[in-house]
Length: 127
Image 1 (cartoon, one colour):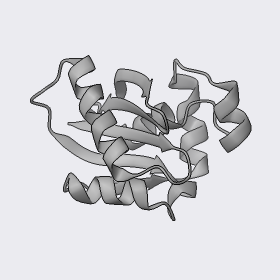
Image 2 (cartoon, helix red, strand yellow):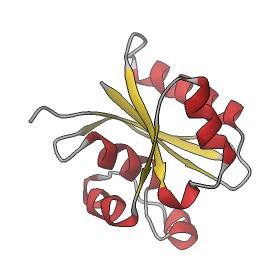
Image 3 (cartoon, rainbow, N blue to C red):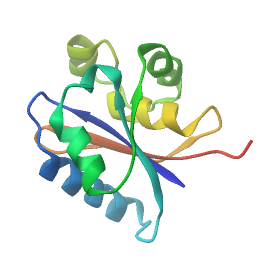
Image 4 (tube, rainbow, N blue to C red):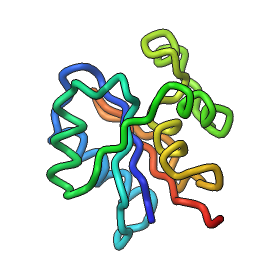
């Protein structure tokens, strides 16, 4: 099962997020995958884009707290100074995806970006 981790700028709409997730699926070569959730950092709780994207995809939106995001960061291959400065996290989408996928989760696709959003895909690990 796959979790899509999302990072986005304020005001990013659901259309862009859903399209980026579609691009991520194509790039990862997992067209028939089953998503379990969309994951975003808790500080995006008030943003309509991630919430509406999850609703359109009929998935829960998991809001990842700061501690879980920080705990996942060492497993993130992408580092962005710009993201770190803006959010306090060096890789928002990857950290959200990995945190939601659990301690044994692994990235299926590292972060990709559109104009206003980022997406990473992680697979839930076995226990």
